[in-house]
Structure formats: C-alpha cells, structure tokens
Image 1 (cartoon, one colour):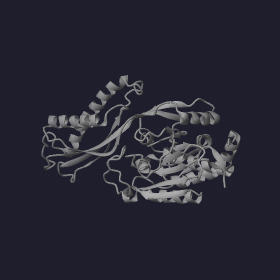
Image 2: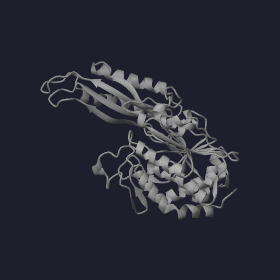
Image 3: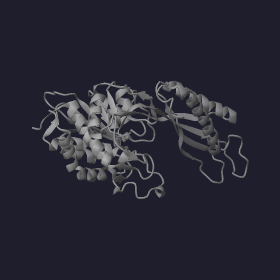
Image 4: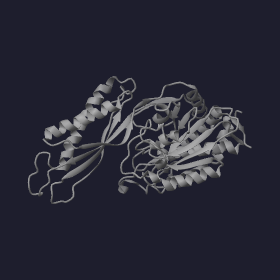
Length: 424
C-alpha cells in the first residue's frame, strides 16, 4: 500500500501540537547518566499504550563484557540503566523489518549561569523548543513515535516487524545499543534520527576515553614542590603531551580518504579534572579524564599504545613514575557507512519528497550509535535527522519546522521500507 505524501503531511501536521507537548514532557526529565530510569519508565508506558509489546530491562541484566562494540564502565550502577524496546509484529510479514532507535541519555547542562532558562524546563521561543536533550536527541525520539502515530491515524500499520528502541549510554559507551543486539533485536535496516540538519552520516569518528591518576610528592604548601611533585600542576604537562600527540595524528590525517579535507578532525579533550585534599598541602593526587577521537581505519589497540607511550614519555621527562592509566568509557572505532543500498535509496526518496533536495552526506567529527549496528553487526544503518543547535552546549534547541518535516520523512520511509497494511 502506498500513501500519498499529502496524506502523511496532513496527518503529521494535525497532531503536531500534541507532538510538541509530548516532546516537552520528554525533555523535562533530567536523564543525565544514572538518572534515566524515570524517563524510560514514562516511555515504556507511552509505547505500551500504543499497543506495542514492550521489553523493559536494565544493562545489569545483559552480559556486555567482550561483546562487539561494548565499552568498559566505571562509576556507574547499571542496575538502574533502563533500556526500552517496543515491538510491532505481524503474523505474515510482507515488507522488510526495521529498527528505529533513539537515545534518551543527555549530557550534563554544565554551569547554570550560562543558560538563558533552566535546562529541564522546556519552552518554545520563535519556533524552537529549548531544553537539554531537545536536539540530542529527544526530538528524534518524538519523530519516531509520531511518525508511527500518523500512519495509525490514517488507518495503517507497518507490514513487517518493527522495533522502537530507546536506549541510554549513547553519550559515553554505546552499551545501550549493544544490549539491544544481545537481547536479540535485529532488522533489515536501522534508522537513528539524530539532529543532522537533514543530512545523512557517511563517516564518523570513534572515541577513546581514558583516565590518568597522577601521584605527586606531598608536603607543606610553603615548601617548593619537587619537579612533577605537584599532582595538579603535573596534569598540565600531561595535557600538553597529549595535545602534541593529537597534532601528530592530525598531521597524518591530511591524507585520510574521508576526513582529509577537514582541518584537524581529531580532537583531544581533557574533560574533567579533580585532585588534592587540603589547601595547605601540595596535592598528592590528581585524576584527569580525557577523550581522544579515532579515525576510521585507525586501529584502537595501536592508538591506545600511542597514548600509553605518550604518557610514559611525559612521566620520564618529569622524573616520576607514570600515572595509572585506565580506559573508562568509549572504546569506539571510527566508521564509514558505505554509500548506496536499498535502505539509503528509500530514505533518499522520503527525504526528497519532503525536503525537495538531494540527500546530502556528511563526515561527522563525533560518534553515534550507528557504528554499533552497521560496523560491528552488519545491519545497514542510516543516521539522519533534522535541525538542532547548541548540542552539548547551553540553550540547546530543536527547530520545530524541521522536526515536523523529519516526522514526515520517517513516516514515508516506514511506508516504503516496511510496507503497510490496514490496522486490524
């Protein structure tokens, strides 16, 4: 069955005010890492009310260690890391199966003084819905749910198996996405509606997270610290050494087939630092948490070896023992999503029908869950969505016109890829 684009557009538009209200409620949940449970419980109720079979489970229930794409975890209780998979099944599937995936974990808002309004009190201003997670990527989650709602309002449902998955850990490990595969959910294609400005990811960088625990030589603050003995100041030397390593990697990246035209695509970020116990003492310890990008084709083990060698060389220059080095989160390969294929062709048709332009690819200097399905598990994956701003920054917002268009695109894609049948 083929629905007209006009019918889909009308169905989405007629319910869009409700979609905005629904998204506003979703954004109101503070679903930073470790706090996602209430948000996921609300979603599981919402999806069950729509008639889907809901599987609610925690990451503690899944054997993640050693699984392809899984990353190590510290400082996190997975007993409360809730994942939700809502499934639509038919007895005799006629079309192709599909996973529609979105993450509900959000990054911390940071200094509240930098926000124009509270980050978890969403508000619509000049056609933008503001709030932490509105663009990254709760807006995409709403587009999934309301695209299916629009088809249902027209009296149709997918003619094949479809899974709606809301996961956590996208911002730090990817283990939520990994868990869905270990739980048994697979499909002929995967669509992840991240805020990509109506573009599709062609290539993306991976990410390595690590922690240095630097030990100093404590003493009274009035005494001169030995070279390298002030643990917090020594962190500056390690940061400088890792910045130099990053510069060397970027120099080699100038010939990279996907990222060579992007200036300095590999980024090093010392994202968190803590240390010391007493203002009157030279700090005896400092912990430095860092992130370094990974180019597609770059071996993760080799990169970790370069980081280890860089840290050891810096320690030798300071005349101290190397700090303890732990891998604490993302150990994610860079990845290229091969162009072409039936799923991308279907998305191209849906995108052209709504946006009216060719589907543009982008090489992303960040990391998404797309690699989990495509790179590690061989499922054709499309990472595509609408327009957002302020991702990982104050005053994050999603463009509502673009959100409505994204919802239309997803509805068209479902109709094309899965086929449709009349609702029973």
